[in-house]
Image (cartoon, rainbow, N blue to C red; front, side, top):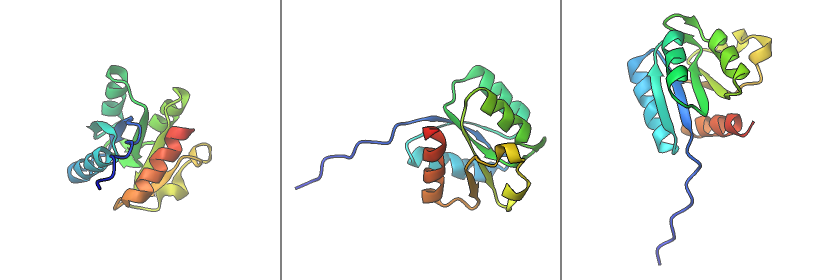
Length: 126
């Protein structure tokens, strides 16, 4: 006998900040697979700020280094607005994350779907 469908995870609108087109596409696909709606992607902090001003977001997925610099000023802005975030990088950039932002989840690339799901769930539950 078929099993009833499982309750889906609560969908969240996730601001995606990633400056590499193919990685952004992969990340957006992963977010959809996890039941979330990607907002963006934004390739820079300035594009991300424009999206923040025009759209509702529940959380953010932030590449540590984007076209216009390190993402930390945007992360601080998100924190001041009460929007949780996850840092992402293909480098061990968690070592350069400022002390006041170190408690944010950190996911290395290439993305491990389970680790990303865990990090997003952690950030959304805060």
